[in-house]
Amino acid sequence: MADITIPSELLPADGRFGCGPSKVRGAQLDFLGSLQPGVLGTSHRQAPVKDLVGSVRSGLAELFRAPEGYEVLLANGGATTFWDSAVHSLIGRRSQHLSFGEFGAKFAKAAQAAPFLEEPDVRVADAGSRAELAAADGVDVYAYPQNETSTGVMAPVRRAAGDEGSLTIVDATSGAGGIDFDANQADVYYFSPQKNFASDGGIWFALVSPAAIERIELLTGGDRYIPETLNLAGALENSLKNQTLNTPAVATLAMMDEQIRWINDNGGLAWAAARTAESSGLLYDWAERSEVATPFVANPEHRSQVVVTIDFDERIDASAISKALRANGVVDTEPYRKLGRNQLRIATFTAIDPDDVRALIASIDYVLERIA
Image (cartoon, rainbow, N blue to C red; front, side, top):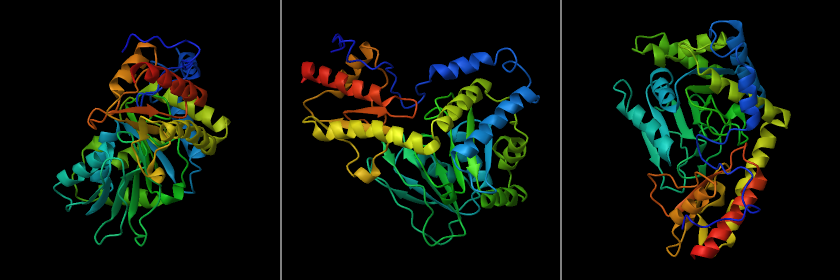
C-alpha cells in the first residue's frame, strides 16, 4: 500500500511524529549554528559552555516554576544511567515502583537487582492502563513515570497519600515540557531531552527538592559503594558549577536551550500543555468517531496528551497505513515494537503544530479510503 500518493494539500507541513528522537524545529538548528565557533569545540570548563549550561538550568527552573530550594541537576547519560544513579544515591532501603510501561518496568528491575536494597514493592498494571501509588511500610522512595512513551498512558504528578517522609521520584522523559504539573508534588522530576524539548540524547536532567538533596548527601556520605559516574553528589556539585563530570553533549544543550526559551516566551508550561492537549485531543476525538479505530487507552483519564496510541480493528492493517504515510514523508507513526499491537503511535509533543496533526488525520483518512 506504500504506492498511495496523498495529495500535497492534505499532507502536514512537517511530517515528523516520532516519539523520540522527536521533531527538531529549524530555529533550534539556527541557534546551534550561531554557537560556532565560539562555543562548539571549546572547553566545557570555560565560560562559554558553562554559560550555556547555566542558561538551560535557569530556563528549566523558570519553566517548572521551581519551588524555593529546588535545584536543576544534569549529568552525562540517559534515563538508564539515572535509574542506576537513583538506585545508588536516592533509595535508602526499599522503593515502590509503578510499572505500566517500559520505563517504569526498567527502573523497578534496576532496584530489584541491587544487592544492598530490599525487594521493591512493584505494582503492575496491564498495558493501556496505569497502576496507583499506595503507602507501604518500609518504603522510602515512590517511583513512577509521568508518561509512558511505549503505551501512551499518563499519570498525575502527586505524592503517595499518608507517607510524607518518603521521596517521590517521577520519570518525566516524555512528559517534561509538554504536561503541566506542580513541582511541589515531586522530589525528583527527571528526564532526557529528546521528547518535548526536541533535542538529542547524552544528558539527563532533574529538578530536585531539598529533601532529595539531603537524601543524596546522606547516602553518598556513608559506606555504600557508588561508582563515580552514578554518584548524585558529584552531579549536584558539578551542576551548581554549571558543568558535568565529563564533556557534555553541547549540541544537545544548545537545541534544548532554544526550545526552553521558545516555550517560556510563548507562555511557559501552561501554554505547552494546552498545545499538546489540543493536538492529542484531535486524535482521540477522531478515533472515538471512527468505525475502524479506537484509542488504545480506554480510560480517558489515563490517556497521554503527548503520545497517542490508536488501535485498529482486524479489517485494517495499521502497518499498511504507516507504510503509506512514510512513503509520503509522514514518518514514525509505527507502534512501539514490544507492544505488538495493530496500532499507530503518534507523538503530539510541544514542537508539533496542531495544524499538522489535523493534516495527519486527513492523510490517514485518505489512506483508509483506499485500503479499507
